[in-house]
Image (cartoon, rainbow, N blue to C red; front, side, top):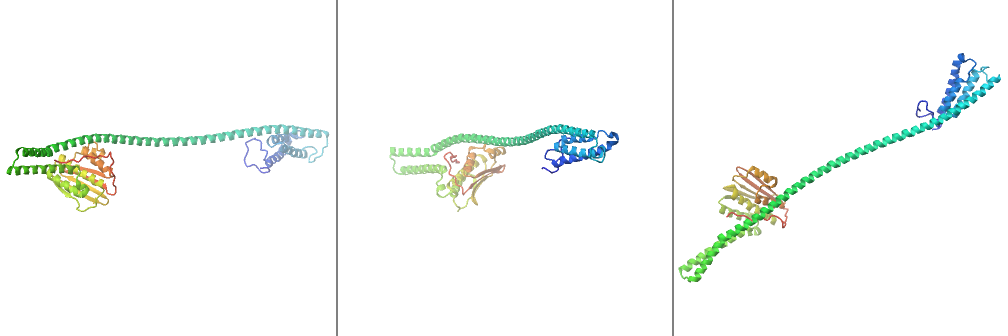
Length: 422
């Protein structure tokens, strides 16, 4: 600011800025005083010659450092001091000899030359300083821009690495999900093949049962009727043949009724899972010779229809496996309602399931029979859970279904045919 002292120290021997007015004129006055004092110190050596030598030096210095006006001020003050104290007659400003006038004129001419040269040099130095300052500022701004650019580049690189790592994790999860889905699809394909095979086998078994039981009974009825037509039997023989026909017809009806009930028991629709389960367990105990203890409530709230059907199929498949594979002599059936869940438990005292096969079943149902896999798929479709525990003392199967969640099975759901123990 004009008229104020500098707020920063300039470089050594660097011209003072034009706006530092007070500083420039102060330097001019101080150097003029120093020139006079220095001439006083040199007076014993110089005597009455070279009066203005020290002033010339300060004028040149002020012209180069402070400008024209401070140099002029410096020259005037220095001239006055030298002329008053050192030029004869001393302690006087009067001119007594023409030679002194020549010295004064020479002083001012030389000071003018020194001032002009110093001012020119000062202008060049100021321009150079401005150029250096501009270059320094530009270099500083460029360095700051490069630092900001490097910082931005580092931040961008870090974000790219984070996004790359996140993308890699997402890709790994996606690949894992794809593998799981592929395994599930492969298991579903194998299960579908096994299901079709089992349906064919079940149809052959039903056809064989109908041929060996109901078919034979109907054939006997037909032969007896033909014999009646041919012989025209009367009396006791007619009564015996009629009794035989009645017994054969009753047996055929019983076989048809049993097969129909096993395929889909009417009690399941009419009375619910409790009555249908007790009926099936009683028939299973008679046919298999296995003691079955049944713990099913007499009165219980009926669950949704699809839940009843799934639990009945699980019960059928479980008891069929007990008869075919476990070698058990006794089994225990428990059906209960636990809060809003329906739970079916089937326990036996058989030989159990091998640990390796049980682990495969718990992992993905791989290696498990189509019956067990079908049961688990049925239960899973309704949002339930199927668990199997087994050791050398027997096997325990539990199926838990939510009563409040009734899911209608789709057309592609696993509809396994009922299996029975002949």
